[in-house]
Amino acid sequence: MVSAKTHQPCPDCGSTDALTDYGSHTFCFSCRKRTSTDESSTPSINCDLIPTELIQYEELKTRNITEVTCRKFGYGIARLNGTWVQLAPYCNSNRLVVAMKTRDINKNFRMLGNFSDSTGLFGSNVWAKGGKRLVITEGELDCLSVSQAFNNAWAVVSIGSGSTSAASLLKKNIEYIESFEEVVLWFDNDIPGQQAIEQCVSIITPGKLKVVKLLSASECKDANDMLIKEGAAAVQKHVWNAQYYRPDGIIAFSEMFERLKRYRDGEQYKGYDILYPQLSNKLRGLQKRRIHTFIAAPKIGKSTVVKEIAYDLMQRHKLKIASFAIEESVDDSALLYMSIHCNKRLNLNPKEISDEEFKRVFNEIKTNDGLYLFDHFGSLDPDNLLSKFRYMAVGLGVDFIVFDHVSIVVSGLQTENERRLIGLIQTKLRSLVQETGVGILQVAHIRKGSGSKEDPEDGGHVSPSDVLGSGDIGRLSDTLIALEGNASDGTNRRKIQVLYNRITGDAGEADTLEYNKDTGRLLRVQDAF
Image (tube, rainbow, N blue to C red; front, side):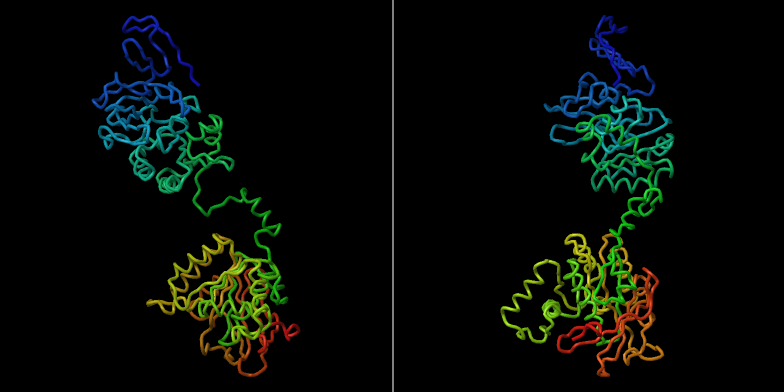
């Protein structure tokens, strides 16, 4: 820290030991005169707000801020209306104090004078234009803290009226701010502070702006908190480590090693084997962070296949599943999963098994706490639906969401463009899986009389163009899987076809399934019973 020279003679009043030389200015404790020795230092109070003789300067012990630092910025204390307050001076472009912010012991703030006539940046009068670096903080005490950490030798200012006004104050002072070679923003580590950064970054010339990001080991909320808890060296370190601002979504390859290592080690895109081995091989296992869409003609069994896969993931891999089967009641959904577990159609006759066995099946599914159901029927506002998806993924840690099916979400809504709304839902699902890492097992319908060479409802092939509602369903999916067969020919055979596979590119025919009317299950022919 800068050392003050005390007990010096005063040339004005003749005192032999009352003057202290602070480097940027001197102050005589006998005649109370303050004299600047640095043209960029804080000027004397030259206004009628508070008489100079009433302002005192002292160490802010609880804030670890020295008297020298306070004097540097003119940050003093005074007794107003019987209460001691801290005073932060705000100057105009001529370095004349035109406003003062007061702060009492209970953090009550009051502005004296005309703040709108000031620059709005605390400390801007202390530092002349131009220089290597300017640090901008969110509060006066943060400004003092950063300046003190660098021996009061670097230009540091703070915004004067809260984070919400940061952008407007930077615009007002853009000529002053842009005069520095580098600008560092250090706002509070809270939501308003970080939002203020996003509002400010477009104001300052790209390539000049850096932002302080608290290092992972730090739990400090601002610069003064860090000065108190971790010391000046930590404050310096964070300023030195400030990073050039880069908009969200832009990642340098040089920063991706750990991310790519997780990918290589299988943590991020692990594939889970499922009960349909040929399909599993084509997909290299069912992966999270993907949208897997299943399509078929009515009554072919696409919902059944998706439930079989979800049940397998839950029981064999111990993953958490959320089932949004919007066309069926929550009771039917629950009974269908119990039906798979015991190979009986409990959804048709829950009394097919004894009370004891019914309880046993329920408890065996309940044990892993791996199944969540959505109690709703029919259309639902898409934003409401997606918020529930997000809660399941983030709040409950669900691994896969069964979404059956997308068309009915918008069927009851009053909309003139159903296709566009379905496309919007798919776009939001795409963002959701990337953000949260959840996997989506989505069911979609195909158009009736689709125009294929052989109608899918009569056992013909299904193509991506047959998807009902919006082409975005197929385009934004990672895999598009069709179930083909004839519900009325009595064979009960179904073919799985991979129509589109963004993951491996391996498309084409997969497993052959057989529907068992007694159990209600769709299993491979060799596994059916």
